[in-house]
Image 1 (cartoon, one colour):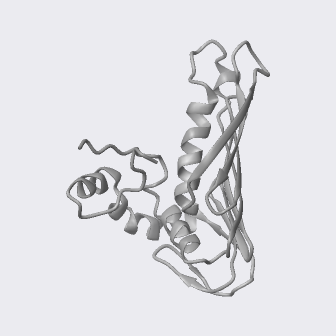
Image 2: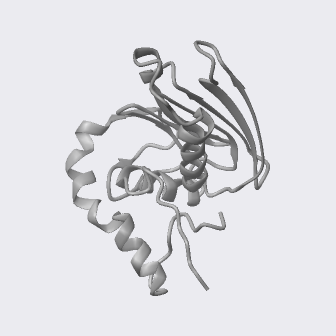
Length: 195
C-alpha cells in the first residue's frame, strides 16, 4: 500500500506544463519523434571528481521529463555509451520506443554544455533550447503562460519575456504539494513510481 513518486526537475515549470497540455490537446498532431540532449562539461573542467554515469545523471531525468511532456510512456529503451575523454563513460545515447509508435532519442554527456527538448508531430512541433522556445502548431492555443494565435506560423518566444506569467503559475505546480494531494487522492501526480 506504499505510494511512491519521482520528482523530476522541470515538472514544476509552468512553461513545460503548458507545452504538455498543448500536446495532450492534439496541438501538434500525432507524435512522430522526440529528441533531447542534456550535457554538463564539469567532467572536462574537473576530471577527477566522481560522477554518476551519464545514463543515470543526464538521460534518465530527460526520459522522464519528455515522456511526461508528450504523454507517451516508453516500453523499450536501448543505450550505448563511450569513454571519449577519460577512463569512465562520459557520453551516452539512448533510444526509446514510445507507446503509440513514436521514437525518441536522448543524448547525455559530461563533456558538453547543452539542454534541449524537441517534439515533432504530424502537424507541427516544438523545441525548447535554453531560454528559447520554437513552436509551430495546427491551431490556435491560449494557455496560462503564452498564446499561440496563428496556426501554421513559426513562433519563437524567449523565457525572459514570459517570466511574469511563469512566476504567477508556479505555486500550482509545486511538486511536494502535488505529491501530498496525490497521497490524499485529491490530485494527480506527474510521475508515479510505477512509471
